Each structure stands twice: as structure tokens, then as C-alpha cells.
Amino acid sequence: MEPANYTIAMSVRLALGALGAVLWCMWLLLSGVSAATPESWDEYDVKTAWLKHFTTYVEWPATRFAGPDAPFVLGVMGDSPFGKRLEEMASRNKVRGRPMVVRAITALDQIGEAHMLFVCQSELEQLPAIVRAAEQHSVLTVSDMPYFDKRGGMIRLCRVERRIIFTINLPQGMAARLVFDARFSQMSKPCPSASPP
Image 1: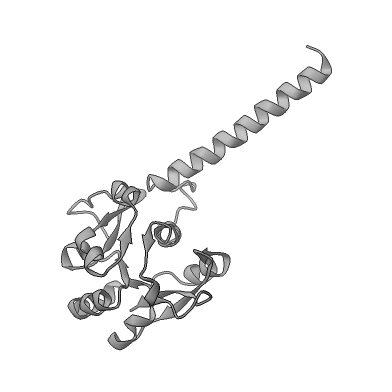
Image 2: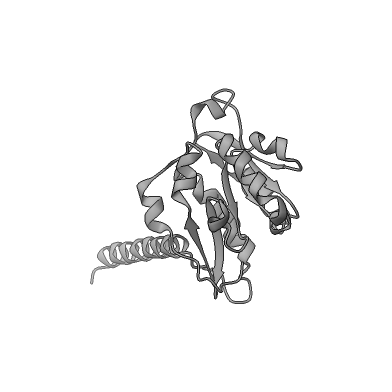
């Protein structure tokens, strides 16, 4: 093979290889599989990525935003297991062109300040009141609390071996006037009843 042709062929092979790697990583994310090595895998890194991913498949009523530049608020209620992961993720991302901010929600009357609310397991006792407030204010609720979707929550995250999957409570989302992309429902998988949170 001529040197010039060989160089072109190698460039094409390298480009195809890089494209294949990108597609493989995308498949891992969408299937709920962590691409991290066994030594570095952290379930809350993966859950953080899912929280950002959810925002691309859900549409909130326009009235939930004060204006075109108003931020998208990710609220966290309870004893957060995320450390600084959410703040770091929010600083690097936008939601439909809006800046993303993380805010601690410490009372029921603050739930309406958020657009998406992660409900920590410490809040089990007041979950019914949280669910009612979230529905009233069109807040997307997410948790890794056991049976969260059966208790009125909208998205439950659960760990199955070394994968993070999620289950969607579509009727609850619709009751809160949220619009879910049809593809989103297809990504939902039932959490095994005995799976850890």
C-alpha cells in the first residue's frame, strides 16, 4: 500500500474506533450500566448522572419559571448522600438553556421552589405530605427510597448488582402536569422488590 493511502486508511480506522467507543459509552449510560472500573464505581456518581439525564425527557409547565433566564432548581430534601456531586454537576450543565442550581429544601412549604426534588431516605415519615406538595407545584420527585414509586413518588432509582435502573410512576407525573417524552417510559424498568435502595 502506498504511504499516502496507508495514512488515510489508518486515519479512517482510528476515527471509526473513536466513534465506536463513544457509542458504547452512550449505550452503557442509557442501559443503566456504569462504565467505571470495579475499583472506581460509585453508585451516587451514576445516580447524579441520571438526575441530569432525566431533565432532557421531562417538560415542566411554563408557569413554573419566573422568566426565560430563571434557573432550573434541583432540590434535595433530607440527609443527602451525594456529597458535592450535585453541585459539581450543576455547575457544568444547563437545562433547556437555563442555569442549573442545587438547593437544600428543609420544609414542606419550600418544595415549590424546586423543579426536581430528590427525596432522601431520612424523609420517609413525611413522604405523603411531600408527595402532595410536589403534585400541587409540578415538581418532579426522585428518590432511591424503597417502593418510592408505590408511595406516590414519580421516579425511583434502584441498584441491581452494579447497575442503576429506574422505575417511572407515569400517572403521578401526569397528575402533577408534567409531560414525559414517550421514549422516557420505554427506558423505565421495574425495580426488583428485594433490590437495595
